[in-house]
Length: 87
Image (cartoon, rainbow, N blue to C red; front, top):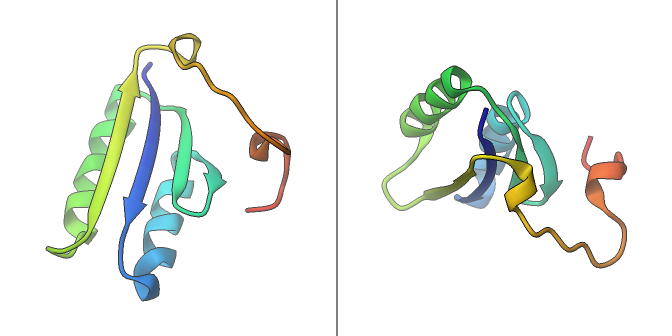
């Protein structure tokens, strides 16, 4: 099961659409950043939903690693994973 980090840059009035989509699959970390484990099947479905939602000038980046162990994650301040700030 891959661990992914998803980042999106979309029009301000459409951010809620992407946040709602990504929250169904991942943990919301910062304004336009989400991360978490996802099955291959759910990742494939997410990719399809992203393609359907994107406007031509918008972008989504997905960084995929085979395990969270391969991510050297440093948090300065409060770790959003342990907080309900974005829920």
